[in-house]
Image (cartoon, rainbow, N blue to C red; front, side, top):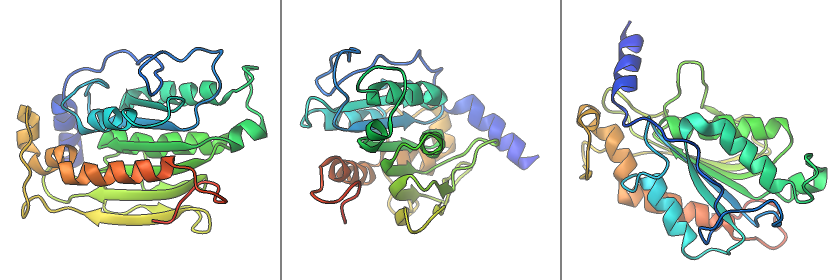
Length: 253
């Protein structure tokens, strides 16, 4: 009963209704046509709750915009609503299809350089998307989960073997709080960079434009607006986006 009550409160208060899925955009903000070559790197983020993918107050959205300012123009960076995970999946497949024949070859899959990040339900969507990519043999450089909250029918704790590196940031206070630990399905293929706890009861963060639900779950809300935490996420994302000579996928941190 407690879990059901928690879920109902979560459903009622995690923001505004999601918008339609975003158009494909390159690093320069322009639309990606089917005649262009595949991006050198694909960065996909997910916002939590029912937050819009273009909400300028959300740190995942701000992170994507920061990254877009100084990366190669053939990179792809986009934030999706967590409920649009399937759209993100189809978008990735379409962008990796260099010859536009509707099917991915082993060579096209091996060229994939993908980074996934998200907050709350969006962090859980990151793991689910990574698993879907694993089923079709597409590698992922990095997954980043921030205060990951899985819906009842989801599991966000085990990182699939196609992910080279994964990191988890979480807090443990309040009605809604993140998963405290992620593990690798295959430790020989996936490096868990860490499970990092943040305690906002000791070091609170002021959140601008907080909703009434944010005030009910202050620590969870602060994990979304914490500038220091998201600066670390940005550093990790940028590091994995940079090609590493002789290393297919991950650079040592």
